Length: 268
Ligand code: NAP
Image (tube, rainbow, N blue to C red):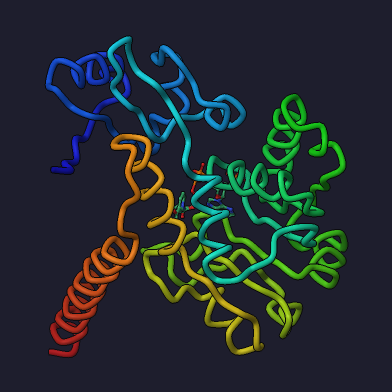
């Protein structure tokens, strides 16, 4: 059984302590708990330590074991779609938790990385903090949106990853890339956003012949990795993906119906 519990930040410690008493195998954590939870773990996996964030907790006999499956989820999603990350030239948009996992995974694959973010200081902090566990991060670059550095990085890149929330519902008309003319065939565009699955970025990239991958693959693979951590067995990712796609189909058709209803009442 997999249940959702909204937890206020000041109750995180008590909620985590309660997992053992409730006989839970483990929990997933999401924003805003991923960073704060590291303090309450008895042991951190290397990925959680490097990323300074926990998204998967396993309840062990001795306490709570914290891991982070975002980076491996990204790697497996790329692999499933045949994207070669080894030595790739990559532009990553964003400097939050998801971007950190993506940059970590890309650097582990010796990719040449440029991080583009609205707040440059966040991109610099991301790379400085990763550099303490991954010296290769020192060679990664940062660029401001709209800068010549961003343009040059896009012109020479074979992979673009959106790890910002731009394009995510309800802001579906937004995109991290203000110059879609820089998108071209031969480039792979991975959008971590999965609500909606066809983001504005992916539509614009598709029109220019890019290979497009939405956030569903990563969502499935980071969840599958959590399953492995909890149960020690290989989950059926085909079944998991179908469940996610069906849930998103239902959500999108519900949203479309609601939008029709609003348009109808406005017309009256
Ligand atoms: P986060 O830590 O809150 O980071 C958000 C990022 O988006 C920051 O870089 C922020 O820039 C940027 N941003 C937000 N609003 C912006 C705006 N109006 N203009 C320009 N930049 C803006 O979030 P996160 O956890 O990294 O998640 C980011 C996205 O990835 C979300 O859409 C999430 O759903 C998705 N995600 C998907 C998966 C998956 O499995 N598919 C996994 C994790 C996350 P600043 O630094 O300037 O604030």
